[in-house]
Length: 635
Image 1: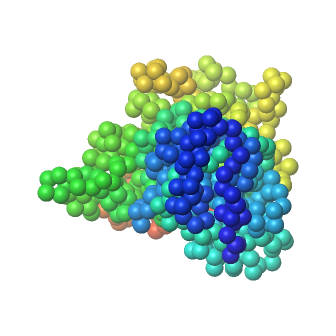
Image 2 (image 1 turned 30 degrees about the horizontal axis):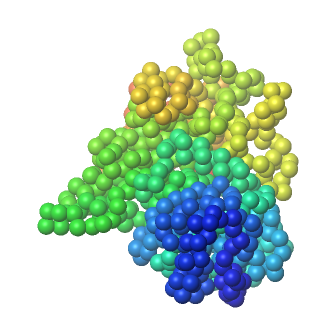
Image 3 (image 1 turned 180 degrees about the vertical axis):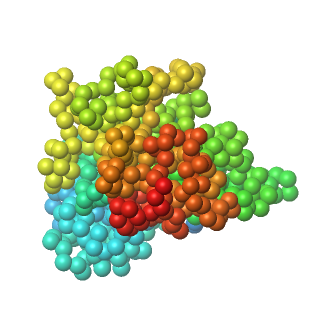
């Protein structure tokens, strides 16, 4: 373990430019605070009425300063007494006032670990549980101008080895909980052995600390996330600090995070959803983040219910209501499935907790949301409609429905978010589908690949220039940058009831015009059968609306006659069906889908594999379930 940082041994007073009155207050308070400071902590040097102002003063660079990164500026500007992070299991709370001091100490440990060498643009991998420690380490890496590479502890050792090798990580940090896993990875045949150190666990309860922000070079800071690798080996997606800031500001404006928000966090932290949507943006806004991971339906229901469970007719808890919840569709499905098993008192309390007057916004993303799940959640919550959005590792969040309930349209992901430019490009001709020409001469909608650009788009695939070049197209000479090809296909469609509501007019001018409807991945979800194109997501939505179906995946099955056949992999809902034939499936879908969209082959299974974000690798699923071209039940 690294010895106590040099910062904790040095004179903690930064060189500052202070007014006379403020300097006098500093001198008067210094002795008292020096005496009461905890060992190893930068003592609080100002009385409370000056503390907040001091933290934002311009300073020269000293050992007790942090760079003026936008995220650190935002943290420094929040009420130091407000809660930044809560651990649901232990109840430990950590304030914004203690956060930056802990970030400084973690950054100094990083510097000590590499012998004081510059860390700008170096990759720092870290394996830390969902906790305050994760937040501290993440911000410390940014403050060191390095690139944060979060690792998923459940990953097998060979996969972690691949990420360390591909990123050429200089440092590996682990919490005590995952020190043994880190040792396993370090024992492999790594191309470059990273420096290793263990980050001690923070226990909270520290006093507010005076931390200065300095105007210094911040280039090199960033985040690197690895794609899910559904087609090839995972690629490292480099998101420089300015891209992260743009993503956070876009979401902050669109979803209106605030210091009054209390976000319940049940997501993994090696994906864009868990890191940007549910950590960085709340920190920008001064929200409270409560970590509860891994997801457990019963525990989540208990947490939602806690503020509303009566004791002798009165609420005796000080637990704040959850106001912000952003998860994947499978989480909502599991919550709905388990709700009926709750006691009557718990059911009543959770219904109250989910009501719009308490749960300000509930968001679903990272996979398609089945319409029945959306309807069931709205019914349970007294009309709290799930907000759908679209994003990916390379671009953060790109499209979103609006906050007004009328702007949360079934199967739609809304409009381009603030600062995001979006367009549709015809997959056959390569022509841009201009707004207003979304329907062809025969009245059929024109599907196109979503292409995006703007300050929220990633810089590059790490050490993979060919893949980077392949995924961008020229800017057509307008000088506003290249377009990123998402590989996702959508149509645009005007919705009469959406895009002109009072909430939209007052706060969400971006949420106007035709809405985007995702058809699926170009390579996995657009099935070309007999000259027709079928959206797998559309067929899945209809299958999932049937009472017999609990889960479904629609895939492209190779066919010598049709090119591809529409195949369905189904898990039955045992309450409604213990067996279900292909003919019964076809009859059930006959009034819902055109004949060419109805699955030609079907397999009943007990389990459909998904990754941590609920996504299915459909190419692997086809190989596993449909063994050859004619496998399955032919119709």
